[in-house]
Image (cartoon, rainbow, N blue to C red; front, side):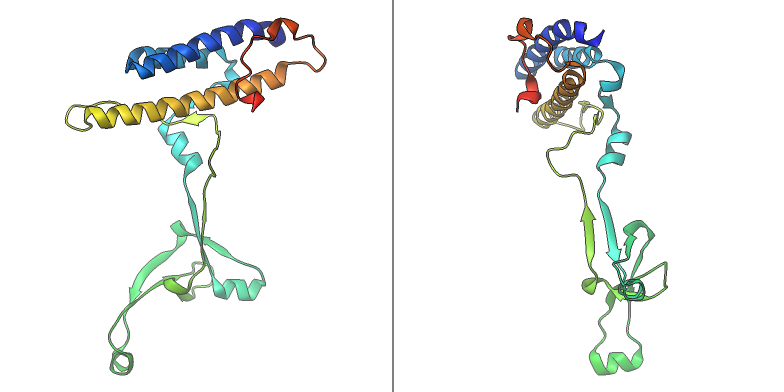
Length: 201
């Protein structure tokens, strides 16, 4: 049963966590990766962190929408159009407008729903993104040092940033695993020395 496995998993988790952090400080990135993979392997499958740049980008991408004034007026509530659906272009004045107001163009966009055109500078633009800190059980692929593409200092910064991100996700999943499997009222006397990780925050 999961409850019976928790003390052993906790002990191994602490061991691998300490090894991962120590290896990272020593810049021993092979052992660091090995320890992080060991941490991930300790968790039951449904709690394991997925390593995928494509999945990570999908989950963390910003959603940008433009509010259409015409559609909003018709519906009586804000109508937002995703940026990917919007055509933005420069609108040049006709000959009479050039004579009266000058020859400057304006950046505008066309709503695909009502076909109306709006000045970009007058448009309400909403940006939705994940708020830090976030835990999504997914991290991007680790950085790879390639000769001529990433210098040593930059690689050290990037790989440590990735390692902490991976470790934080692992800690969060471990805390969820504990929460899901520690039964209320269970005698936890033998587990007093177990590190509670993020669940104690």
